Length: 265
Image 1: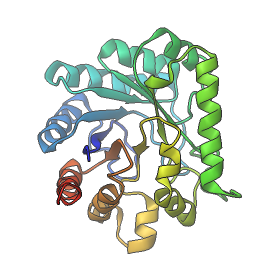
Image 2 (image 1 turned 90 degrees about the vertical axis):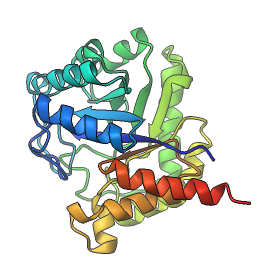
Image 3 (image 1 turned 30 degrees about the horizontal axis):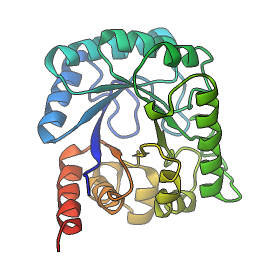
């Protein structure tokens, strides 16, 4: 079993649910990048707008002021692939110019109509995520008939739309959006049936780190959720291609164990 790649999270924001304000300068983001790479990160995901439940949106100008200096500074010191976590085409464009390698759009290219043109003219990998609603209202009362089937259908539609618009499906990874417009049971169903999403033929990203559903199950506070986050990563290792986490070291260790057990006679 090939170990999933580990995407380390760097939130250059003052209000992210887990680490808001810790890395909101280029210098602190660089230090965190160095620590994540040393811990075993394969990719770094840099975002400048909190997408926690009920978060308020930020302006394009503010988001640019947060992420571009951080990306430039990290790229000067690191060769690791960098992902820009944004729904704004201009932020993604300037991030690519500053040294980012991947676009990670939680709106699946639905929020900014200019994002498609950027994806078409670039050759970079793109991650699209499922979200019911928007961060400001997604957790008010999420409802599905069959959450797994509906999200499979969502990605099937998105992939067909991208292909119709000249985007090579080989560039696309999909993220089921754990915690984005889902209840506890929705999240658990998705985790149990990740293989259904993998049948779509795209690399699969799992972004479950420190999410509320872990606290609902374990009663752990946010800062205590790295162990269960690592456990979920290990349990999903045979299916997912990328795990997006805050604590790279814990996840790296868990994935080492999962790979060793899988490879045993």
